[in-house]
Image (cartoon, rainbow, N blue to C red; front, side, top):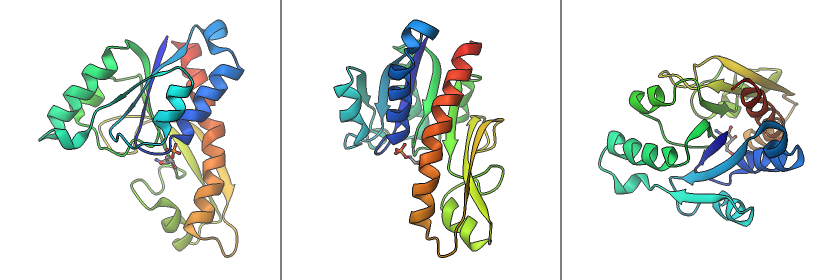
Length: 192
Ligand code: GRF
């Protein structure tokens, strides 16, 4: 069972999944491995980590394509070369076309830094603070055609503390992301 992980940045969620796969010996216990890490940005910090772990990496630069459709077609070709059972969006900051989402229907998941269905979209931490929420968190969900709206698979909860800034809250939520994302991936691998 091949896992392909898509990133755009530091890739700390990707790294958490890779480390958990190593620690829990997913290859032996689940017949699963992280086959490739794909980024739309050549500068994504996570690419180097993946290479150091001996994982195949690729860059599909969205700026080299003149439409979302042509970018997604190139991305699909790159991903499908690894015959994935699961495609994991981990801080992948591109909106995907309905065609892409349909192609990976049932095997495409994302992590979002809020307690969905609250605060879909961007700037989730500041919006939760501004709304006076006492708790924030993160959600792993199936990806459907609607942004941040697919069925929820796992959630992690953190308190919002007096004096919190978006940065402080983001750091607290990220610790939870690194707990729930590997857990959700493991559950899906066990089921497929
Ligand atoms: C995470 O907070 C994720 O929820 C959001 O982007 C961030 C990615 O962080 N969508 P990383 O690249 O996994 O470190």
